[in-house]
Length: 160
Image 1: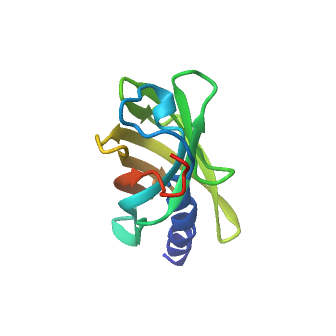
Image 2: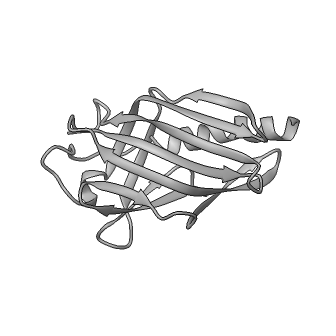
């Protein structure tokens, strides 16, 4: 249990930061991948880690930031949580979706690397220039479930 708590506490910053920095235009009137590119700030949000049926972490993401950049394809974006934890999403219509079980990232816990597999992830415009975020993944060989959700907007200093 001590190892699971250590993993959970070390996951907070990377996941919170990654799902939250960048600059660019607002989502209003914009379509395609470029609408998501830039710096973002969590207006509200929470990261939860449940391991073996026990909640070991509940982290408020409000105020944290993260960045999204263009991917290699014109309909692809990458939310970079940490240098070893990018999440790739495909943009279709107005929303972006992670391909189930294809996005993995590596985070460090107790001096050991832990692989987090993203099973679902969706970014959906809210109509107010921001978007809602919902994601779910697993870590520690499937023993831990990592979930996050909330809403994000451009930081006031993003140059919009």
